[in-house]
Image 1 (tube, rainbow, N blue to C red):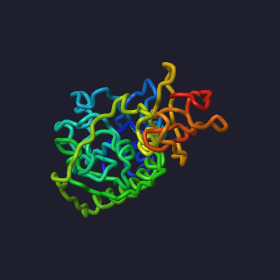
Image 2: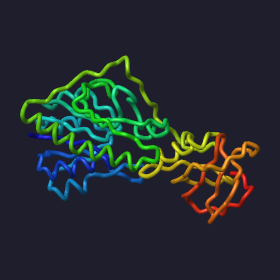
Image 3: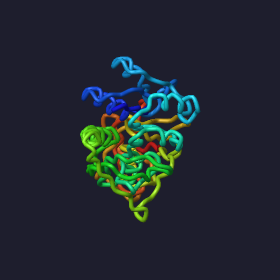
Image 4: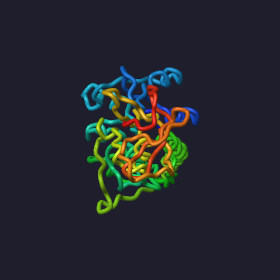
Length: 293
């Protein structure tokens, strides 16, 4: 089977390496140059070189030059796993079998952008690892494989990411096996159950101390590594918050954002509801009881 692999995030790398280990033939890897480290973005060229596989850097995958290159390989299958651009029909029509994509949500729920982050921000207790055939539209193709993933209250983005990768590796093996045996089954998504998540922006990551402690906890774990971190501004300087813990200290007669206690420079901050410990921030900041953030 001739496979073209498209990807540019950590998830892409993990699945690509798994395919190499299982000796599943990759004819071409399409990726992006990463000029500035951002979130979970990654350049797959080094993994292509290590496995003696041709690779192609693209800025716009839908450019005619890139389409012609994919066509020339006459691929049976395209795997598009971790890619921000929408593939146009001229690409989707190329492979004999089709183009398989991936979305880390319980499709048709939570289509769209940043599903891992939004799942944690919203405090969901479960999500899913879902492979689909890509068609015109956004995350609306027929489902090939879907496995439920439980989200624990203290799971952060990295832990959830790893759960999804672990499941996806098993799923992609099964998918390729079923394709080779002509036993692949799919099912359509229920449009009545669909919703779309928007692209997040910088302000979505800002902590407002009037939020509840639970909401701040969810925001911080959602934006932890490999993402950019939740943040607050103090004296016109940005501080990233990487780890927090909900505190039992409660005093309704204290304004939100005031530090209640400090122990070993770990402050307890009053929130809109309850309070929270700032266990890990960067850069370092000297905290004092009574200080306002």
